[in-house]
Image 1 (spheres, rainbow, N blue to C red):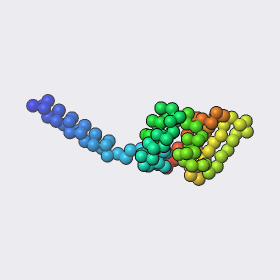
Image 2 (cartoon, one colour):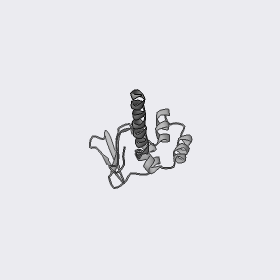
Image 3 (cartoon, rainbow, N blue to C red):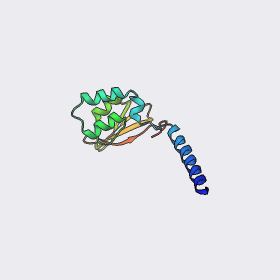
Image 4 (cartoon, rainbow, N blue to C red):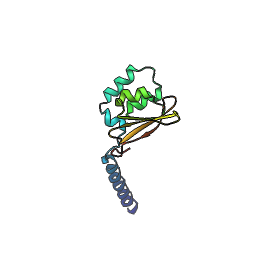
Length: 122
């Protein structure tokens, strides 16, 4: 009988924890924040067959990943508000949303670092 009581208690305990986890707000990626309509992201991917499978999947899921190129970022977010090219010309940084987030590109125009907005949960 004690075992049955303990098992019931554990089931209730874990069920309550699982319900709490499900009710928590899902974190947003920057792309989801700017392209909230997943149909728009899917449409973009279908029109750009030259994208790698990993980049297509990331865009579809609303994520930013290294390896995206400048043209893809500009298509998704529009032209940057500010650009800065490092003195040696090996890197370029694009600033958006009053400098709250940025993209760092290498000399091959590929994304190497994304600095997400502080206001989004990532």
